[in-house]
Length: 134
Image (cartoon, rainbow, N blue to C red; front, side, top):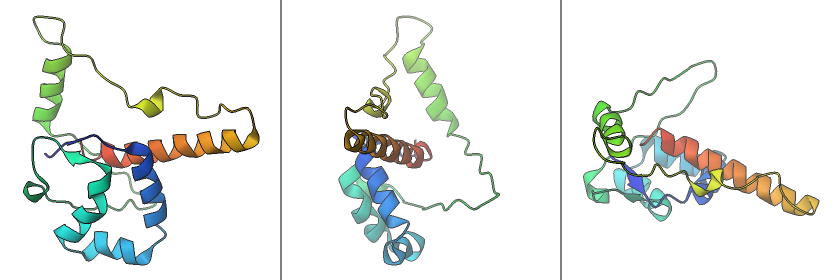
């Protein structure tokens, strides 16, 4: 399973918010070539340990009243557990994305609050999309 690094969650979320209202962009994700899909995503993240040529993008579209349980690739789960809680040694820190480190409802003015709420929501939207990729 391909993983990504340097994910720009807020920018990806804004892109997803815009894309779901754009029939031409949605058509690329539904029926476009791999190069077309990858070109739309390249500015938001980098494949970890692989090149864009080595991975395949398959878009999934949620449906109302359908629950998709996405089980992670078993080796990814086991690798992460070995890294963060090994049998010997302290293990690696488990980092949270920056969007979990600020208050999305903060702001001195209504405009600042709206901007922070959008930042928080778009970051979570990007995180939601990426959670199905990692």
